[in-house]
Image (cartoon, rainbow, N blue to C red):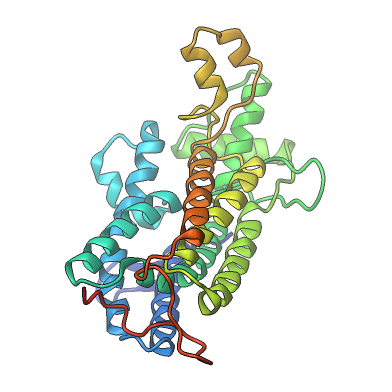
Length: 331
């Protein structure tokens, strides 16, 4: 973990320019996504300038959606609306960014009369590559951490990191001492005393697993783009594969409560069975969204494979590797 990579003194002042690991990883992922998507479009005979324009919509929509979704999800931690702007502190959710960025890109493509599904297929493999960089940022920041590793590889985070504080507060609550570490000098002194007598348990390297998953998705979807038979096939395959992987990865993460939306305990409480609800585990909000993605994406993919609509079928000349160029809707 290394939240701050570099501090650069500003000449003539007492201030420094701080380079955060999370922010640098996000910027690297965004640039890699633009470059690889533009290259993919050019190789497919389509204008890469469309990707550059989509990138603007994706950047503003993605950052706003990712941060807003996180702040709403953990609203008790953010007393001020200004917290929406503090993206350098970490706290972005992939789902929020993905949904809002996709909506922004769709609006742009619709206004410019481009084939929406075609261009989303171009973008999605690069989105997965950018996601891998984002997970590297999660590792540097310490967020999106794993649960206790009862078996398999595990890692112990340094004193003062986000995972360390999480498990320290869980330990203090378990022994009846306190359920949180206060901020300021008092909290620092308590953390120091605790570190001398208590060792954090090894936890799953969830960020690393998520990074590997995103890289594998990027590779699979890049190959699928060249072999696709329908426009939208890459997008829907991503929804299914990522949904499955995210649902499983949530089982080894410890940074989301299991109380949201479609979780079975919530449903049982709604129908008047609180005792049964208390005896069952719930689903995190990410697992609920993942389940919807898998179900909806799977049904849509099944329907897409059966369709013969000319606008959805990828038409290739005999012997050609790539699809119809440009992706503009001229109808």
